[in-house]
Length: 184
Image (cartoon, rainbow, N blue to C red; front, side, top):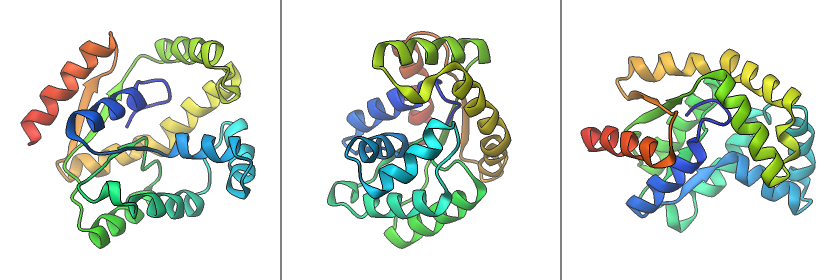
């Protein structure tokens, strides 16, 4: 977990590769549907371009479909999910029904100004319309309002690990690997 631009997608992908499991990003799934012009893509585009979250019901159904794929049998890494309390409950149900266990919730913490700089640079290099400066600031507000409360929930369960997400990819990856080694 972490705010937009914290590097959670990069680190989730790296964790998945190291452990031989898929990294599942709801953002990537939404963008793929937008690019493919699917009905979900039409719905998701409206929310994404406004800097809003796609409704829980759509997100939960989409995630359930993804986790049912054979490559998730041995586990998976979630990138940026859950984002709401409703999604926490849905994830709990999903994990129970698929007999998976939540081992750790890593949250990458990065200074807000660094986040805005990262996302503006990413928008320029990747041509991402969902990363205009206004949308970035709105997404950071949403993260603080809707996602931060989840950290308390996971902290109370003893699975939350806060990590400094600043620095190079390798520096952050080292912090992540150390934190996961303790949880193994």
